[in-house]
Image 1 (cartoon, helix red, strand yellow):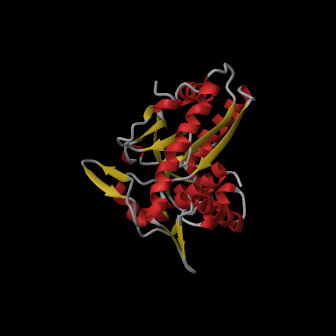
Image 2: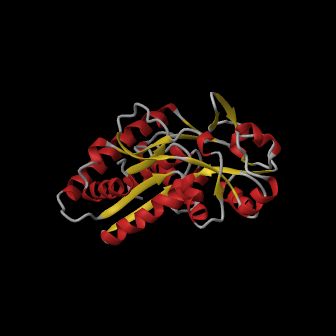
Image 3: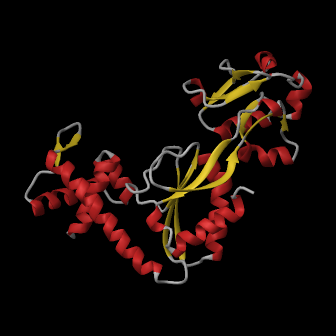
Length: 295
């Protein structure tokens, strides 16, 4: 087996936490993952992964070899990108990460438009609400909601992420339109399951702050599930504007408490400084800023 391929599989095992997870990422069987790691250990003459019936853990040699391998692959990617930078037409594989809701409703359509204009580029769009490590997961760019930490990334601001409180016309006819956050206590409210554990979205009620009611009629761990319930008149919903925009425009949902919604959160397109010269990435950044850049 090729040593670089063995190293790539070993790195996937470390980053994904198990042979099975690495197999899913690489599109091979867990048995084949084990063979690659075993072959690498034979080539090196050292044990990298300590195996047991229940778990796997890195040996001290394995931890050192993993860090060195990351540097080797980063240098390899840079060497490959040097060839790509010499080409005028964007081409190759572009790997992008984006949050699920924003990715589904905004980023995915823009990616499709980008590919129509750049047919030589293949795109791997990964939608996840987790914080993606661009280097560790070999991503070219990511769209992130919230403040950007000191990670040495280029961060280009996009249009902010806004929330909307809305309900179906039938619900408002039956229960009335809330005029203040305090009135939410007598309304049927639909809640995202994550908010029960982590109150991210703070409502504004005059000079005070408040939170979305926890005593919800329906709790769901996905915004689209709450949206369907709101469309059927089950209650009030607070969700991202990008998720509800089409329903509001069509009159299927009506915004309420517009002055009480949480403050918008910043959104950035981030990428590594050493990749900005890649034609495929440079063109994608231009495309995103033209569509979503702050004006």
